[in-house]
Image (cartoon, rainbow over all chains, first blue to last red; front, top):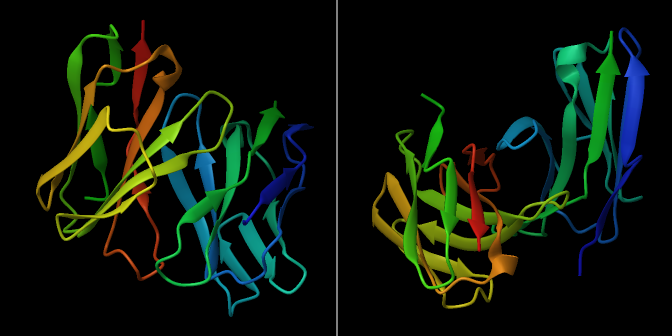
Length: 113
Length: 114
């Protein structure tokens, strides 16, 4: 059974800092990996999707990397802003395109001015 | 339009009530999903609809009954729920089921069962 772990559980940083969120998964036979953002009491917003054959994806100040063989992904946020404060969830899709998403517990990020 | 809408935003119901949650998307997506999210926990998949047919039921109790009347609309009918069913219910959609692509999530319905 796939297990997804995110470290740290919570992170508080001053505005402007670069930061890294970590995600690890136990079964490396994944189809793809996705990072989501969730604001309190709201739905999820997809940030980046990395296919299993890819090493990284970038969108604006966000960069996600994937090392499938070691079961790790990182989300790098450059020049953090208070508006980045949210819970960040990593989700892996099982070994086929029909695989369901298995989510990590999330990292609660607070960026203070 | 990349929006998934859900109604109502909040719902309080007794254990003997019957209520329904509604989800709508107009992106032409042919796969729709229901997830349940307890406080401070990640979302858990409940149901997957593909081309208006139930494709996956993650062993969800029968007091939850999904329905997909058409390709844009997904309902979740609730009956005889328990207090432990209180959670945020999220709907999502994607182009199709089985292509491994992004799912677009709605804002959720926060359900409280008394």
